[in-house]
Amino acid sequence: MAVFRRVFGLMVFSVLMIEVANAACSNGTCKILDECSSDADCGAGLYCFSCLAKSRCVRSTATDQFKLVNNSLPFNKYVFLTTHNSFAIEGEPSHTGVPRITFNNQEDNNGVRALMLDTYDFEGDVWLCHSFKGQCHDYTAFEPATDTLREIEAFLSANPSEIVTVILEDYVQAPSGLTKVFTDAGLMKYWLPVSKMPQNGADWPLVSDMVANNQRLLVFTSVRSKEQSEGIAYQWNYMVENQYGDDGMKAGDCFNRAESSPLNDTTKSLVLVNYFRSVPVKPLACVQNSGNLIDMLQTCHAASANRWANFVAVDYYKRSMGGGTFQAVDTCNGELLCGCNNVHSCVAP
Ligand SMILES: *[C@@H]1O[C@H](CO)[C@@H](O)[C@H](O)[C@H]1NC(C)=O
Ligand SMILES: *[C@@H]1O[C@H](CO)[C@@H](O)[C@H](O)[C@H]1NC(C)=O
Ligand SMILES: *[C@@H]1O[C@H](CO)[C@@H](O)[C@H](O)[C@H]1NC(C)=O
Image (tube, rainbow, N blue to C red; front, side):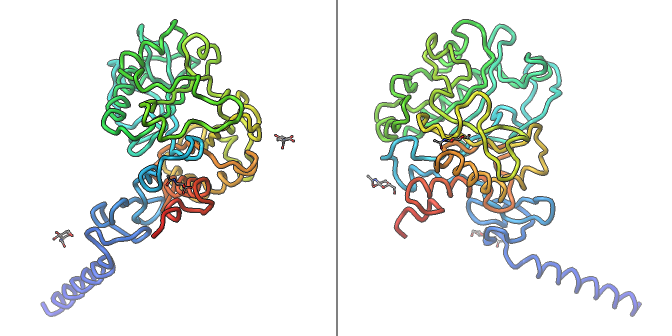
């Protein structure tokens, strides 16, 4: 009995020690990189996440630079967190009746202001889809484009000072197929017309003017002819973009994708940096979204005639080892807005 009591006592003691070790912070008092056991332990703007090892509080929210600083500068002076394949969200139910057999790229799009969407003709409509041999199939389809576009409409309507950019990898061949879905979703009233977009490297309209004019939606297509036929901006008339996928992740090397002008072509006043694998590997996203991403943004800055990215496109944007994509975007916004490496330093304390 005495032996039992001693062992039992020791066990209670050990359990208490573990609790003491874990109780350094809890219930919202844990700071970034503190160990945690649940989201509730972490302070505001953080959540409890395990990147390959221990669970720590990491950032979960993007900074709204318009609210933090101001919106009085040209659109191209700001940086936006961008989700690659924004529609390929885990847990999206099948809308075709057939289980999906394809990969996901995101968990949600909270706080994201720039979305990359792949549009296809499918079922007599436009759908968001991963392709298999260039086609959308019932087992690679996510949802009708109108569903997602309506969510963007609801967001723009509820947030009258926000700007949303949509970048389409566009396979739609149906005549005016895109115009139809943007119209059906009620988005034409927010459209920034091509006539307001600079083609010669000049500054974009002021964000404050875009807000005042309610021209708060920028849409780019990868199909050149649609700029003429539908008034949808051909992406690479306005933007340079680095190589996507595995070839764009080689440390120290940042070069344009085939469709884009060289990154140092300053007649295009927007810069997009891709940083995601060809096929997403979810457990590794937290590593690539951390220090490696910042390093690539520096490399691409040098390759882009000393211009910072305006769009930082990633997979699983919320996964990181600390500040992740949010900190990377804060760094670029800080550099662009006030020449310092954190947008929070642009505002007087
Ligand atoms: C956790 O924090 C909240 C708000 O600060 C407080 O109301 C609550 O009592 C705390 N709970 C515990 C278990 O300490
Ligand atoms: C732009 O970059 C290319 C390499 O991609 C280089 O050959 C060229 O000299 C650069 N142009 C300028 C103006 O720096
Ligand atoms: C907005 O912020 C920028 C960057 O800090 C600053 O240069 C500019 O003067 C500010 N504009 C106004 C109207 O406060």
